[in-house]
Image (cartoon, rainbow, N blue to C red; front, side, top):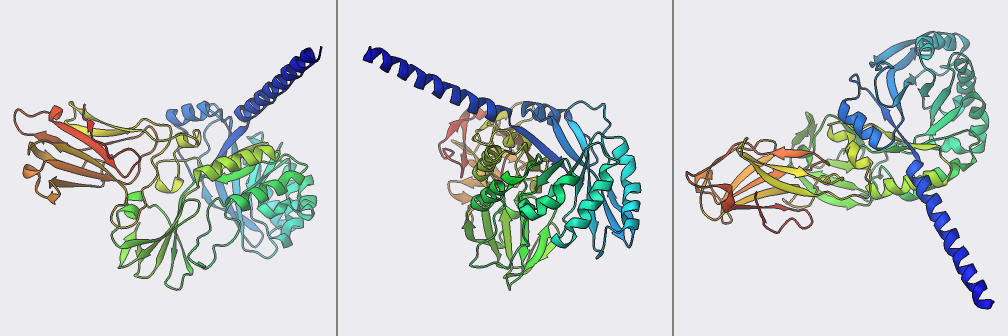
Length: 461
C-alpha cells in the first residue's frame, strides 16, 4: 500500500510538472509582440509581412504625423502616409506624436484646435494612439485633454514615461485612456560621461525595476522596448553634442581615426577620435568620443520575459527595423533572440564571383574591436598566383596578398574582402573575380576571420 501511494504521488508530481511546463510553453508562445513604425511612407513589403506573420504580430502602431502647437494653434510639423486598410498583414493603428514648447499647451482653445486636427484620423480608425512626453506639472491638464479626445476616438491609447507607474500619476491618467504603453528607454537625458561608462539602451536592473513597477497599473499596459542602435557624439569635455543620423556600420568599424577605449556592459562602446574625421557628414574633432550603443540581445530577451511575468499585455518594439544601421537588429533577428549566425561562402559561376550568405536566424553583429581588427574578413586563398582580376562588390574593401605581403592582384595568392556585419538571411557578393586560363575555384579555399569558428579553411564550392 505504501509503495502504491508513493507511485501515485510520483505520478501526480510528474503530471503537475508537465502541466506547469505546458502552461509556460503556451504562455511564451502566445505572448503578444507588436512594433511601432516611425517616420515611414512606404507600406509594408511582402518580406516584412511574411516575417511579421511568422512572429505572429497582429498589430502595428503606425506614425501618421507630428503635431506641434504655437499658441493655441496646432499644425502638422510632419506627415506620413498611412497604408490603406485593405493591405494584407497586421492591423495598423494610427499614432500621432505631439510636441509643445508652450507653458500651457492644453487650454480650452488649444484642445479645441487639437480635436479639429485629430478628428479626420480618429474618424477612420478603430483606435488612436498619442505620443506625448508630458511633464509632471502638466499631467492633469493632459489627462483632461485626453478625455475630450477620447470622445472622438473609439479607443485611445497613449505612450507613457516609465515613472508614470507611480500611483499619483496613474490616478490622474488611467480614467482618460484605454491602454498605456510605457517607453522603457530614453528615460533620462544623456548625462556627461562619468568614468567612461555610457548609459546602455537596455540596462537590465533598471528596466526590470521599471517593468515591475508597472504591475500596479489597473488599465492594460504594454512594455515599449528598444531594438535600434545609436551613435552619440561627446565633445572633449565629455558633454553630449548630439546624435548622428543616417550612418552605416562601415563608417564606424573601419574608420582609422577612432580608437576603441572602452567596451562597456550590454553592447556599449566608446571610440576616441585620434584625428579629424567625419561620419555621415558630421565633423568629429580629435579628442571627441563616439558612443556606440546597441540593444543587447540577452537583455532584450530577458526584458520580454519580465514584461510577460509582470502582466503586460504585450511588448512593443521601437521601431520596425529597416535597412538602415540605426534601426538596429534585423526584423528576422528579433523573432529569434536565442539564435546564432551561420555564414557560408559559395562561388557563383553565373556572376563569376563569391557570395557570403548568413543562413542563420541571427545577425552577425557589428564587429567593433580594438586595434585594426574591427569587422570581419572573407579570405579566398589559392595554391598559386592564379588570381588575375577582382572587384570589391558589396564589401567595404579588398586587399590582395602573397603570403603576408600586400601585392597587386596578378601576383596574389590570397584575397581579403572586409565587411562590418551581416544580418540574418542576407548576403554579400564580391565583384568579378577572374582566374588565370585553365584555373578554376576548385583550387581555392576560404575562411571568415573574426567570427567564432571562422579561422579554419573550408572548400569553396
